[in-house]
Image 1 (tube, rainbow, N blue to C red):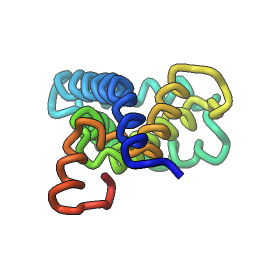
Image 2 (image 1 turned 30 degrees about the horizontal axis):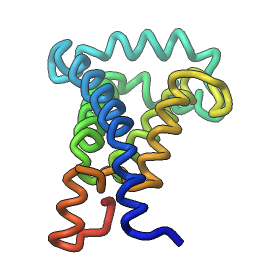
Image 3 (image 1 turned 180 degrees about the vertical axis):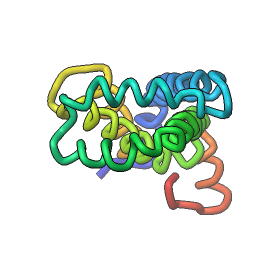
Length: 160
């Protein structure tokens, strides 16, 4: 059994990981939103990306891409852009970090399913995936994040 002090030290060690993952997602989302129309201008890029990778996508995921994502690419472009931005804010600020990490894992898994890459293939996407899993498991927002304040003052335990 680990002591509370040991847990605090280990959470502090995750601050650089939390800040770098959060900042990179913030920048990625901000760039998509800044491209125009609150992220909807990203629609052409998203459509091109899906069409280029459709042959590589996992079999179980391909019907979802063809039947749902491509016909609604404008809406998905906005969701992806704002999703990345909000996950980035959550993780960077340490605000509901566990929830942000789960949402980030969802985004990364959808991307890897679309390009047909398994979680066992070494890649930058897998670095993001396992970093987000680590942030989730370790409650990384409790290390100099807003989660630390929420947890101590209001006894909020959900997603902190």
